[in-house]
Length: 427
Image (cartoon, rainbow, N blue to C red; front, side):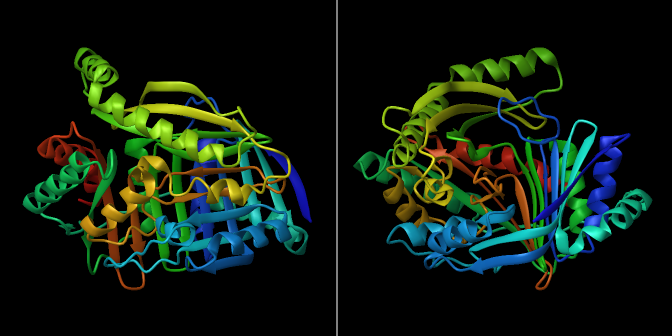
């Protein structure tokens, strides 16, 4: 049971900075920020969950069933992540590539303390066992003074060289021309060893230059995710399920005319449109596993959305589910998301595993939450820096969709465009 308290806040941006600073004392932290991005489906402006009362941490074996049991028994707010490698739980697949980060495959926790902010109002929800701490915590939050931290430049290395990348994309194209797959998302890792960073400072810098709708600061002891994701994986509102895959990227330009040209070129690009439509078909198929018959629909096809760093092509696919459908089952039957795998999905994931050189882990997985009523909202972990503070290993990956129309050099350039913000904050 939780104690609820609503309070007005004078300045939500100041409160946000103070809340984040205050949260760093806890072992488990999930901070989700919409950055006031104008979107059709949104719950809160920002959310902070800290301090696990209960938690679940596991590898991929039986992971979705374990999560289902945990969610059904707890019937409370749960925050955490699904790593890409949970694919091995749902299909006969393996992950044998190098893993410098060593994150668990799945982690969720039930927070003792929760702050939900909308406009100039914060809703505070504390478990009864610690609700006597609300006033003293608010006092401590108000006394936090945000400050700009300096950090040393991080020496980033590239796991796959440009030459090797072009060869691998050539191999991917051979699979496509043979008919093994139509499309696959091929990713490569950038990494740093012996990296000493201040995770909160890096997150704030990354979020500051990107301002995406699904920003995340995540901490579980020594594991950190600093994410500027523009993409929603899946949201459930009552009986409605919403998926918003991104496929298609173009540059932003400082001058309005060039920027508008880039946007129009993306909207009219046949390769980008075909990529997006292929994934929309895949998402429709995934949602149909749990949907009420005939309820899967495309609300928006190949719409162009602008973010601080890039323009993106986004579609919105929806479905209706029965009241009796388990929320975890909806996730299990759609995971990993189509935008980060390919079509057909299983064949694409097998080929990805042979050509990529790093275990994806949390990259291209999902971070989000369940509500006590079984609704949920999860992002796609892209445009993100992952960090293991114990072994000082830092990693970020980028990828692009390879189709029959792909030009390897152009795919490489797209990857560098997506990596730009991460390089900027680490330099």
